[in-house]
Image (cartoon, rainbow over all chains, first blue to last red; front, side):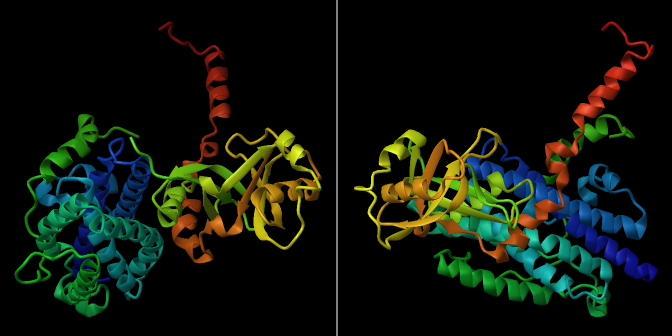
Amino acid sequence: MSDSTSVEMRDYFLQLADSELVLGHRNSEWTGHAPILEEDIAIANISLDEIGHARLWYRAVSDLSGEDPDRLAFFRNASQFRSSQLVEQPKGDWAFTILRQFLADSAERLLLTHLATSNLEMCVDLAAKIAPEETYHFRHSRSWVKRLALGTAESRRRMQDALDTLWPLTSQIFPSPSAELAASGATPDSAELFGVWADSVESFLTEVSLVTPGGERPVHEARSGHSKSLAPLLAEMQEVAHLEEGAAW
Amino acid sequence: MSQWPRYEVFVKASERGPFRNVGSVHAVDTEMALQNARDVFGRRPPVVAMWVAPESSIVSANSEQVGALNDPGRAKEGRGVKFLIFTKDSHRGSMTFVEERGSVRAPDALAALAKAARTFTSSPAYTWWAVAESSISSTDSDDISSMFHPAATKRYRSPRAYHTHSMMRQIIEASTDGIEVGNE
């Protein structure tokens, strides 16, 4: 791999790793607070899976650059993170969390399908490891979106409110490879991916009587800037590691 | 406070092994019950398949009650409906309750239990369950890769992965070895 490819792949993997870590952390905030006992366990499981996936992507970064995954996760600040604003949003109510999970899961499944045919072996291997768990996450979140969207007037309203907030943020749901990276066959092109993804999501949302907010459909854009919620999230997540730098675990 | 319906959960740990009851979950329907069952009972391997059945579909009896059922006059023969029979034969295994024994055909659950008591006699059972096969919902073999297999690579979730007893023994032996241990 050339040096420039390596630098670009590092950034691509960081976009994936940081998003998984942040999403895993957000979902973990439900532990002990979910509406139903079984869902408390489910969301904790999903959260652990996401963090496990983050670890795999951080290791991919490490394979390329030699950086330590723990340092990447716990000793970078908000401006250095490459997560999407979608996953950074506070957890909100159950409808918000589940809809966000559905959007993230469906996007990830599509992305992994393409990474499985990457000409980079490391992408193919990681996609193979992660895809089965994402299949399960997707089933879970999709069935909850359907139940809440077609449930009571209150659940429908909360779902619609969640969609109104989340839909514009989907423009950054996919990581952005450089043009060269996408052209090289290492990663799919995110603009194309977004179109395919948005089509299928919109048709599902219509089936369950949810309406995407009026106006133009978002288009894929590169991640820039962060939600103001990211810095407090990192402060909490990284607190213990920062108490004693260099501690052995 | 209202409660969702309860579903009993049965887990099959290996291709050749029986389904065993491991507990129950609350859910609104069978799709959710299977997902909840996987989240609550499928985190630690090994699992190859799961069943759920609404608690209302299960008829249970202890050995005395089943004995009382064993009355030829009441146990009508005939093709009837297929019932799966589960029994608890021993007090081993704290995490499981009844285990699949087989099936019988009978016109109703009580007749099924009576017939089962005559059929499955190899060991005395403390508890008998009969469930109509049509009440049971199952995972598919397609589900294994996404629902159960990922846990198989995560043995660290099992308490047995942590050799606590031998580690404690080592620590205790080390502390009686003449190595100073503070009186704190």
